[in-house]
Image 1 (cartoon, rainbow, N blue to C red):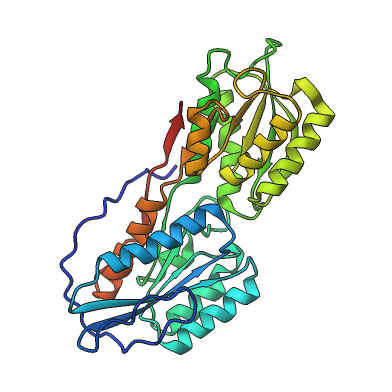
Image 2 (image 1 turned 45 degrees about the vertical axis):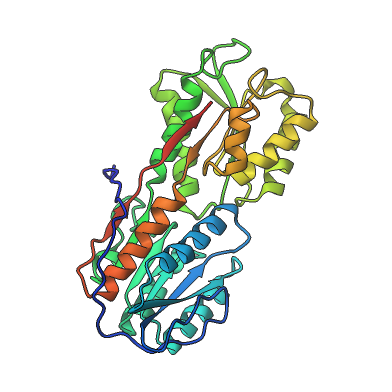
Length: 338
């Protein structure tokens, strides 16, 4: 397993060279700055604006770039919505290349398309910072060749195995270890994100592994794909509770958006979190943190959008300065309970 490392954002004294003239932003863009300032064009491609976590992430990218501006240096940040459509995102990357972006920050729609995208950007001579969705090697566990082979390409993110482990530990550390009915096993339903996404795969696997590692017996009553969506989380949970009734002791959700939907379904079915069912998510959205405090969720895991977005910006600025990049920059998750 990769070592978990936290990169602390630090104040940077910027000495910028080789910058280009600004291109006016077209989508969620920033201030083009004063005529005397050196202006760097930054293209940010997000897989989908309609995502709770990535909304926080992209807004923090924009505000952090703005906070680092000086009278001498400006950042013209253009942020585009991939609309969860890989063809749309490929067109956006092509446009970034045509516009002559100085650096690109990319949250892939499909990690399986990483090769073609990386090759395009590298061929254009533009540094590339991949975020949030990690492309993997052929065996699903090795460092990704497309990143290792290109010194101007890197990945910033958090190891999802840690988030899954923390979810499982939250349940295992309860007084009844998740076995509410005392039948000697933890009966659960799993609501997964995008099945292609490695975060969804790892959170699904390692949450249950943590229970087993704690010596607990588990029983999967249902495992469905919710594609990170709140409405799907509610639908899947409602159907599972109708089918399995009181046998459902734990609802695992790969993210908080689906957990919000699950919470609504739990309430609608007359169940009570903390009394006759447990619910865990990932992201630690502000609303979910309040629900944890109020006992409406058992726990969540902080996916540190501030740490990750600041690291992505810091790394992008390193690339603009011509500094050597590491292949990977890791930011730890944090367990959140009442």
